[in-house]
Image 1 (spheres, rainbow, N blue to C red):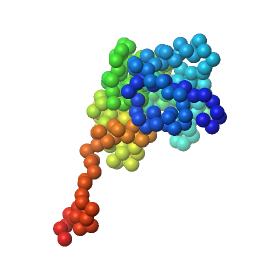
Image 2: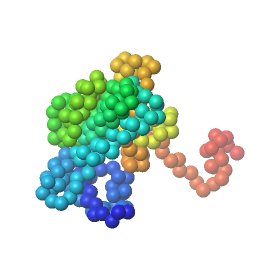
Image 3: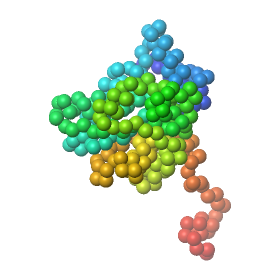
Length: 257
């Protein structure tokens, strides 16, 4: 918008968090809702990018990876060293690819250690874990509802080169981590972000991540990107009372006047 560029956003119809759609609407993008899923939409825009004078800025674009990798530099700068484990959600697999590239470049320049890369897919779209394309992926974590990750091979390289893993977490585990993070840490992330937290909880419990390890979790999106899921999954509901000060005081204090 600021640069005056024409921006075209392609989304799967009815399968996008409302907060994300609101951003595209407000910035004036041209929005096309494809009657299909994310993978089908990506296939379409990749073909158009080859035929028409448009630039695809999904994570299949190498410049996108170059930008994303610098987050790994920031992690190392903040800690003074790479962590033992980098835990990250996996959808299209661009993030795990970019972070691993960044950690390797930082290692080459500064001699820092390399982390184990641990990526977590949602069970309903765990294509890499199950080694098969999932035609109709389904999960409440919309940002990782992807059945054929574009950076599949690169994600496997990051896993294998780092001695890490890629595993899956259920929607129930994601929601549990989603609520835990908000209630215990005061951090409201979108559900897909919390796949990394859910995965870490599993791996600490089963001993894969030893006690005392330094683990960095990448939270890839703010919770306000998907307010509907927050309201649908939270046990907290507004208590409706009359417009009466005494009733309000009683509700707050638990003491009848």
